[in-house]
Length: 222
Image 1 (cartoon, one colour):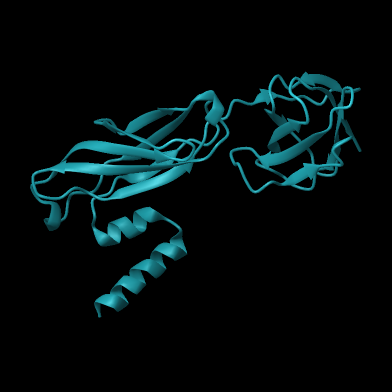
Image 2 (image 1 turned 135 degrees about the vertical axis):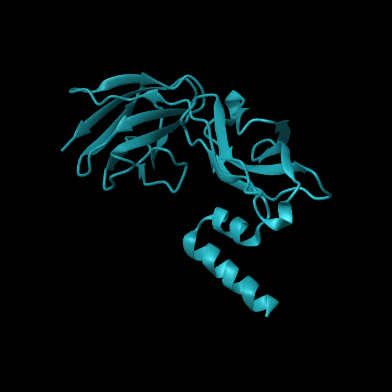
């Protein structure tokens, strides 16, 4: 019977896609509504949550002492906080990379801590890319660059690089790092005809040239 009950709980969680439901059914005193920002800040991931539910008989006499925030990805670290939010500052080299974030409730009043809940997020330092009539001039100062832009389905978006530079150009829906919605090609003259709504027609454009410091012209067509 215990196995059947657990299977029912797992099925309910998978159906809803929400860890909070499973935590509630298991009554494990995990923080609720853990949310990590996805590209909202250029240098950090902002994490927020609500306190766990300690109203059941199981948790009588317990209270929240503090929270343990752990994050993993390009770097693995952790820290404690007494607040219900936390800022994970991301080194420039790890911007536009996904981090898995977990928050655990540390309790007082007994011999056990609460459960954990989590989310994933990333920092994004994207420059604006505007599609001017006749084209706009841009530069990639390093080995790659991220831009934020608006695209319309059915339009073609073209990139012309100076000199002998070639490049890969990837398009993502804003607020995500995958899957790639389209890749402009061929590398000598990248071009992509948009066939996606993106996130409210907003996209990230990831430009990866064959040499650092590349310059390019971005233009559009019908």
